[in-house]
Amino acid sequence: MHFSDIQRVPGDPILGLIEAYANDTNPNKFDLGVGVYKDAQGLTTIPRAVKLAEQRLVDKQLTKTYIGGHGEPRFGTLISQLVLGDNSPLLAARRVSATQTPGGTGALRLSGDFIAECLPGRGIWLSDPTWPIHETIFAKAGLKVSHYPYVDRENRLTVDAMLAAFETIPSGDVVLLHACCHNPTGFDLGHEDWKRVLEVVRRRNLLPLIDFAYQGFGDGLEEDAWAARLFAAELPELLITSSCSKNFGLYRERTGALIVCCADAEKSLDVRSQLSSIARNLWSNPPDHGAAVVAEILGDAELKQLWAEEVEEMRQRIAQLRSGLVQALTPLGLGQRFAHIAQQRGMFSYTGLNDDQVARLRHEHSVYMVNAGRANVAGIDATRLHALAAAIAAVC
Ligand code: LMR
Image 1 (cartoon, protein in one colour):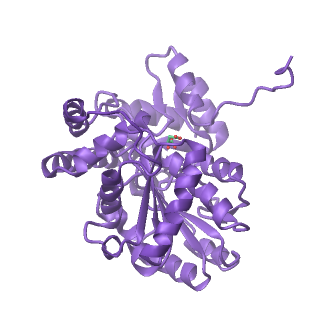
Image 2: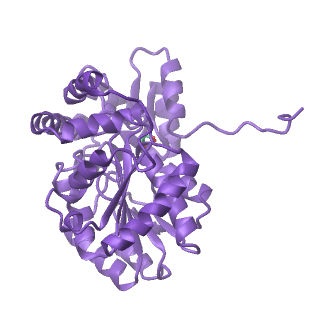
Image 3: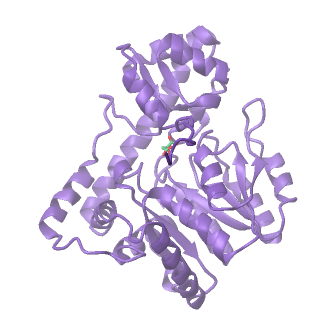
């Protein structure tokens, strides 16, 4: 037998919750697990702009032949503009290379292999905590993974401790930063904090990798790009991973990009050639459909406007759910304790609930959230905020 020594491994800490939730027969269950947006009806619908773009593609697309290692050039240009700004001087100077990837996760893996192959010996530093898959993606790419502090034991952002740790990171190492809507905590750096991070990154010659998976879900499409654009303007080199899963609702279409800012146009071509070779060995050509949809939307003023309105609608709804949950917890004497939920940004909240409380919420109240108390606020049913608050109060 060939497979007799293969052991079973535990399910993914996030995706495993999809199945557990589906199998729960309690009609009053709550899904605050995997990061998907749900509307007032509890559905993760396809945005109207995406539907319209798909309809156009059915008529327009004439071939399904390969699109090449970097994907569709039009998508690469448009997603770079969305991230860096329409008038970014880097784009005009051809300092930017964009590679279409299977989701933001694919972009992260591509960046991990790029660092391992082209910048050997560089370690990567992740926030503690971070998205659990960051840990494994870079380890599987062969990088040494280390951590810098981000939130303290009282569940507060610790910028001073973060910056103190940056002073000890070896020159040349990579630091992964979340552009906005930090996953899992929801705690974002303010503009002044970002400027301090930039200063130490530049002085200590660190290479930033900005993970940008939630553009538009924090303070707005343009506002959320502030830090990425600051770093792109101030530093000669930068890696950005962009995801279209959440803001375009294209989760299963696996649509993203690795955007690399280089010192000049020549170096950009060198880097690009390496990325093409690495991608060829990972997935050959990226999937097309989601990127074709995004290009159709971003390349058409009317569709883009509709899409931007839909993103804004989602963003406002998440903000309302945040304050609504705190309001529902207030009569239970927990408003102060959970006030941070209303201040955090994006889909996720590090609630401050511990693993024990998360387990009790799941087993006693059918409330599903990720360990360490991460709740997907964007999955809350607004009509049952009081029931959710009562369940939280019962385990506190
Ligand atoms: C999440 O963190 O829940 C999302 O980014 C989905 C995923 O792939 O884990």
